[in-house]
Length: 70
Image (cartoon, rainbow, N blue to C red; front, side, top):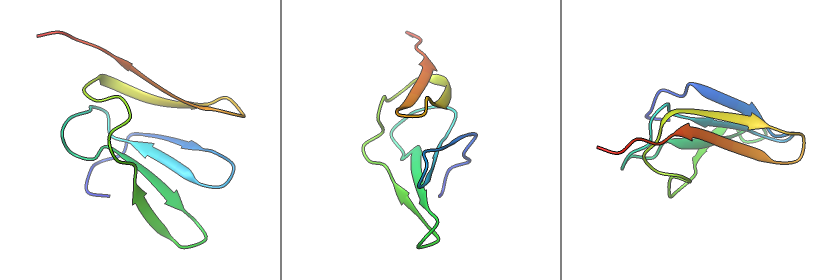
């Protein structure tokens, strides 16, 4: 991926990684180990949030972040 991924979660069949802040660029990626490739998740699932983090519950992938208004 073009972005620095800071939060990663294993979903049982692939890794999902996100950049720390949302924006107009792709900031979420899925790694497929069987093809050794990163696939972009587009569009960004939640947009412009800071301090984004992923949590795998065992059945769902939860994307967390802090919203700020300028």
